[in-house]
Image (cartoon, rainbow, N blue to C red; front, side, top):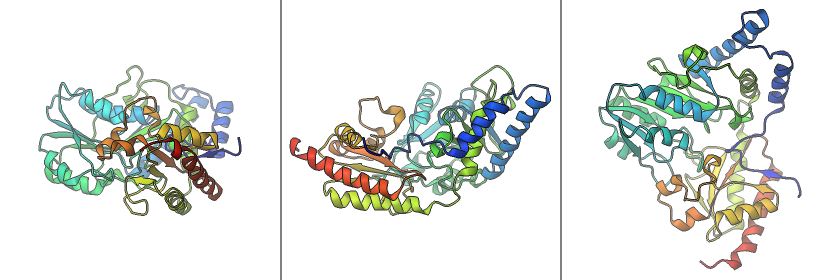
Length: 380
């Protein structure tokens, strides 16, 4: 196989050299338990707390809990707030949420009025429908910052205004797994909790965080010791936290090339494959993120196209890696109202800071070749 072109960065990213170096040093020299009372353990604890305060300041938060990743952070926000609540009311989440938000929300149906917020054909929350659903008894609203399948940036500012108007006491949780470091975020704007995961921006797997706003009170899901200010029991993942810090510190403040490369990919594929169509927002619009774009290649089945691309050294995906083994159509694409043919032929391309012009050129050429090879064998 020739040089691999990796365009599945929404699933996970390659750890940066800075992350590998920092974690290796920690494993060799900073392996002490941060709860230990002797000096080396205290030094590790001090490093964790300094980093925590840096993140709190960066996000304009009041507290922050280190977790095992985005899924745990989402569960802690939703279930930690609602499982022990004595209030009855409505729980809302968008129809295009990751399963890490959808599943814990649905698990509360016996106690709460759980509903989904509809989206438009670009994958963004329908604000008119949201206004109707945001009743005074709404307790929680969960909306992702950036959709992980089609790259739609959700209208959080507008949703915050609607929340403040219709149900000011409702907790707004934002899954920022695909948005953190790509889009500026401040909890002081009206977000009550915010989740992110290190391996989406060149950090290690198995570590993330939940940032909390001032009025947020949650209960722990993992019981035992009193680590993480009593919100998450268990010895801290010191190496992971150090890797998370290195990934954030090493991430470029501006990455204008990423958007330009994405738009070049879009132009090339739509030019080389006339039957291809973009799913989601206009890639050039402000509603589209810089690193994710979703195409359909009708009538070629997505899995067939994906493996043909893989054989040529180009790696893409059908959507969320967490749901890749499920046989049914994407819930995100269904919520957007796409035809069955478009859903069945949809592939996600996602870039990173390491994506090159050569990667884009090869991916476009290979897409054209593979589609041309497969198309004659498929009847519409």
